[in-house]
Amino acid sequence: MALISVCGSLNFDLVTFTGRVPEAGETISAGRFETHAGGKGLNQTVAIRRLLNDKDEVDVEMIGHVGNDAFGAQLKDTLTSNDIATDKVRVLEDGTSTGVATILVEQRTGQNRILISEGANGHTKYSDSELEKIFPPLTKPSDIRFVVFQNEIPATLEIMRWLVKNRPSFKIAYNPSPYKEVTRSDWALVDLLIVNEIEALQVLQSALTEKEVIGLQQAIQKDLIGGYKQVTAELRYLLSKKNSMAAIAITLGEKGCVFCSNELPEVQHISACSVPQVIDTTGAGDTFLGGVVSQLCTSHTLPEAVLFATRASSLSIQRSGAAESIPLYQEIRKLYE
Ligand SMILES: Nc1ncnc2c1ncn2[C@@H]1O[C@H](COP(=O)(O)OP(=O)(O)OP(=O)(O)O)[C@@H](O)[C@H]1O
Image (cartoon, rainbow, N blue to C red; front, side, top):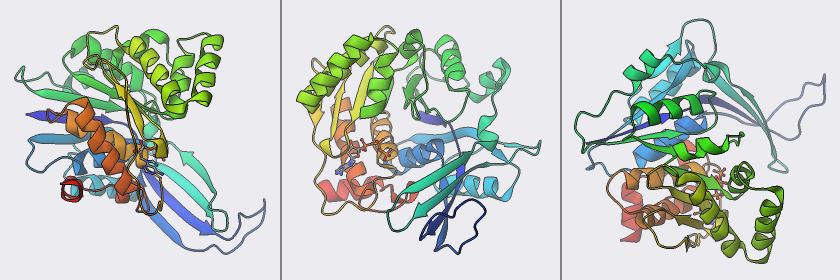
């Protein structure tokens, strides 16, 4: 039996398309308006669920906070309709609103301007007794437990430290996005690190000298894949203090992904799938993470998981939206078998 918990943000996205962005004090008519379920936490939870085979015995739950309002209720409905448990999505009763992203998209240029009101996502405190209840110990040693984090809630590191101390057999997956500084020793809390090319270098800034980082940047400029293979090797060193799989994947957009783990002799590269047309890359990274975590949790190796995730994200970029663009497990299997 396996359980994947995603501990992160839930946002209600309000998207307005406009010919131009108004000046201060100006009111103009906009184009179309859309609402979407969002937040990296919610998107990744949906990605993991959709990318699991229905036959796999894996439960997926989300841990987070919403306000006691219509947006919060809708976000919980989105999760429930994707077969994701929401018992641990707490509704704050103190008047705090659900997290909201107000997005203005300029139709002519496609450029967007985004304002995040973190609302309930900013809820910071978890007492030890709350964490005991949220993360009960495994009932059987053979059970698999993954907990996935991003950086859109403030309690991420505090919960990771608690887990490593109190639930050492739980695997921690971390997508440090948006990047926030983390002390060097905290990287050893992580079993699976998934970053894009910018975040990969930001992470290393906490561990290497400025000169060493510049050296890596130069290596990347000369040879992108080779340079990122070196970055991956440095990241593995950061993670490998704990006796864990120390798996790392750096996504490189259309250039694919480099990855390694303690079980692989060398850093490997996989090319992205070629696609007829890229429609919208929003959520490609979240889909990729969903693909890797869902497969690792169901006894696949890291190379198998990365291949599956690469295929999944290549489908997501051919559709618009974030959570809505994430494909289903069966679609990928059908397309590639
Ligand atoms: N243009 C593309 N063609 C094919 N595959 C792509 C393309 N862009 C992204 N991908 C796939 O999606 C994966 C993740 O993309 P990327 O590295 O852009 O993540 P990201 O920066 O976290 O994305 P986002 O923040 O937009 O979700 C890549 O490893 C690749 O497999």
